[in-house]
Amino acid sequence: MLVLGDAHASEPDRRETLLELYRTVDPDRVLQLGDLEHYDLPAPTWFVAGNNEDFDVIEALRAGESPPEANGVHLLASTAATVDGLRVAGLSGNYAPTRYDRSRDELEDDRRRHFTREDVERAAELDDIDVLLTHEAPHGLLSYGYDPGCEHVDRLLETLSPSLCLVGHHHRHRETELDGVDVVSLAPAWERYYTLEAESNGLRLEGHDHDFGPDASG
Picture 1 (tube, one colour):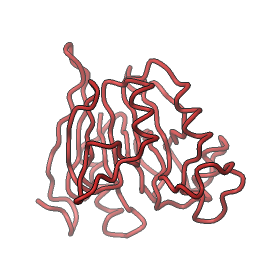
Picture 2 (cartoon, rainbow, N blue to C red):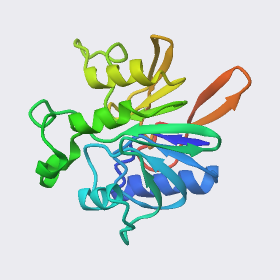
Picture 3 (cartoon, rainbow, N blue to C red):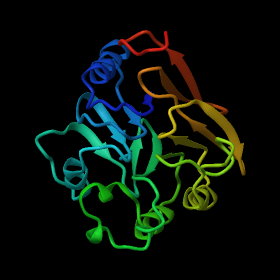
C-alpha cells in the first residue's frame, strides 16, 4: 500500500509529482495525510483533510456527496474503513482552541479546516483500529524547542490504541513509540513516499526517497 504525506497539489509542480508517484508506484490502495488539494486520483485513496484544502470539496465529502472535482478519494473524518485488510481511522483537520467547542455548522470559510470536540468524540468511539491517520501530531513526537503536539490526538492514541499512527502537517520524518503505539510523522510527498505492509509480526512502514518533480530531495 502506498502512503503519502502532505501533497500541496494545488501547486502545479507538486501536483505533477503527486501524479507521477501514482503512475510509477502503481498502487492498488493509497493512504494520505492531508493538505492533498487535488482530488481526482488514479487509485483509491483514503485521506484526512489538512489545513490547506478546497473546503467546499471537503465538506461535500463529509456529507457523503460526490463532487465533480473528486474521483477515487475517500475522506476519513472521524470515520474508519477497511483498506487492504487493515481497519484505518482518521481525524480530519487541525486544532484551534477558539473553535474546538463550536459545532461544525458554526465553522465558516477557511475555519472549516479545524476539528471540533464533536469530531474527536466521534473518532474516540471507533474500535478495532489498526492505523490512525491524523494531520495534527501527538505530544512526544516532534520538537521545535517546544512540543507542537495536540492533547486531543494524545487522547485518541490512548483510547483507540492503534498499532500505528501516521501524522502529516509537519513536513518532516520523525518516528517514536508512545504508550505502545508506533507513531510516524511523514515527510511530504515531494520528498519521500512510503509503503505499508502487514507482516506476521505487525505492520512495516518503509520510506523511499525519490527524484520525481523539481523540488524532490533526490
